[in-house]
Amino acid sequence: MPAPAPDLSHIPAVPGLPLLGNTLQILRDPYAFHTGTRDRLGPLYRVRFLGHEVVAAHGIDAVEMVFLNRDGAFSNARGWEMIAPLFGGGLLLRDGAEHRTHRRMLQPAFRAEVLRRTLRLMSRRIEAEIAHWPVDRPFRFFWAIRQLTRGVAAEAFMGITDRRTSDRLGDAFLAELDATAAPIRTPLPFTRMARGLRARAFLKDHFARLIEERRQGSGHDIFSELCRLRTEDGEWLDAGTLTDHFNFLLFAAFDTSTTSVTAMAEQLALHPEWQEAMAEEVAALKGDLGFEALETMQATERVFREALRLVAPVPFVARGVLRAVEIHGVTIPPGAIVSACPGLVMMDPAIWTSPERFDPDRFAEPRTEDRRHPFAWAPFGGGAHKCLGMHFAMMEVKAFFAAFLPRFRIAARAPAEWRRLPIPRPTDGLRVTLTRDRPFQRRPGRDRSSGLTDHPHRSATRPAGSQQAPVGGD
Image (cartoon, rainbow, N blue to C red; front, side, top):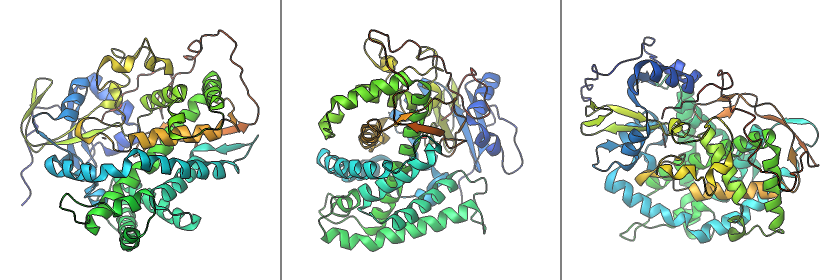
């Protein structure tokens, strides 16, 4: 029998629809919904989302509490049980000693020498793809970069170079992703959840058929590396565990990279002086796109960090409550689900100067606003569940712009409207025009930070200048 629902009657609730609760309101515009609710009800309230009652907890203290989980009061697996049918068994949905054991087993697949080999492969693939991108006519950048990252992920993670196979895998991952935010959680015929579960079955079957071949081979893609990993007892990882892990890892690597590069491209169109700053450091590489050379791309890294601050790929962190905890002076009983808000923290004016504005120099000395609190900037999560692929993501972004900026510039355009869930994307696909010439030359001695605050960042259905307020998963 399922455990009885916890008593949350002492926490204010947001009225919602029968069965669906607040799901449609949150999916339509989670930032506006949670900002308005916080202003009306305070920093702690409950909503009904995707069939679960969830306690939304705003503020950096709540983020720190759930990330660090010092006394083991929170469970990732219970917090994310709404996506367990799609990504169950992945690292995100494991807790405690089991999580630590599996994380240690997976870490070698992301060691430096593996990333170096992956970078060479990735750079070659990026160069080949962008060579065919259109010039001097509009195209939808988001969909082009999604196609590119799909191919990069298929080759870098699985050693697959065939376009048809990588497209089939990519379509399956998109079906899984789409199902994570499906309002109807039962896999009825023709629903998003049914398509997502069929996609999971297809992917796991595809991975399982490759395992023995990859164990006997000498491939250096990440899937091959994982297939050759052994447990602490010297045994192979069993096929079910391996496919569960890889299903989640490839999902995590796929669309978050698409979002990150797209968010950067939007800001470069709005702030061309940063395009030139990044292009100058790429030119200084003199064609050296090695692992250590990319580390020198500090302007690119600051733009990356600022873009993720404004467009957090996953602004919600959900946790199940195992033992009673106190948040904002209110006791949350065992069995509840808490959703903390790292996205909102990254827009908090108490931490960030003019948080609505694009200003990558906030990450540079002497300002270093991100160091004002350990979790001021946390798009990759924190604590024991901090993203394993964080360095991979940074490497992929730098490799892309190292190949892109010697060829192209992004012409100016208006700020994008963003759909936030399940993974952020611009509603127009970020329609841009690429040019071969430099539309802006930074004048000597000009302060690069001046003029960077002319364009507030807007999200879907929210007017320019309103406060952004995501509520928070890692």
